[in-house]
Length: 74
Image (cartoon, rainbow, N blue to C red):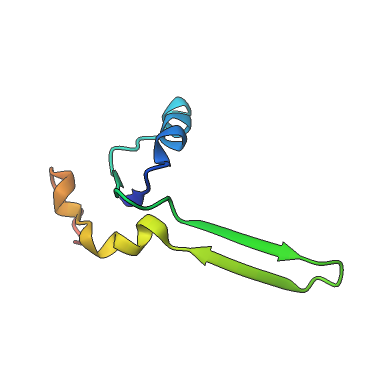
């Protein structure tokens, strides 16, 4: 289960074409899907940045919303 942003549809289609179940993905309106970027220079120094986007709303998601039986560890 996870959150995707308004730009998730194309990625969802790609995943489903590969046989991956995306039924647990929830699209969060008004934001984009989370992304991570890293730049590395020739000295191997790195600058990284993360945009939380839809995953910033993960606390609003619940496994109960998926229906069915929850795992025994839950």
